[in-house]
Length: 114
Image 1 (cartoon, rainbow, N blue to C red):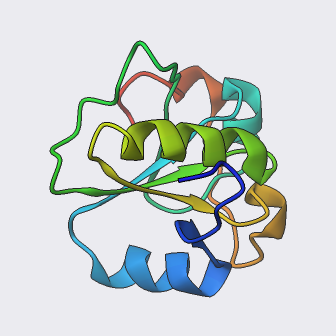
Image 2 (spheres, rainbow, N blue to C red):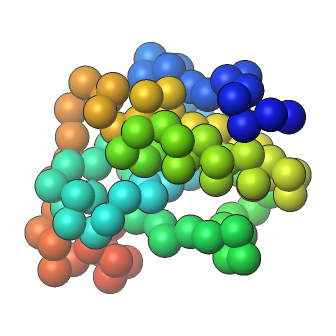
């Protein structure tokens, strides 16, 4: 699978539908803590990710990665897919999300509060 492959990219509408209907969905925001606090997608969690640290989620979960633009999340989704995770990314990144944001006091970000 090539990094330019968009077959595992999700549109805003597709992600919105998954958030409402898929109980096994894990939405991971790869942005900085400050950016996450300023606005994130409902049910998303802040994740610091690198290829040596594969996410600790059940392989049956559907993982959607969110980044500022789609480049980082596409690369990470591709890496997870190479380890047999059901991983996707939001096409266009967070800047293409228009369905509203949730805000968090930055002191709570990364504390398990979210």
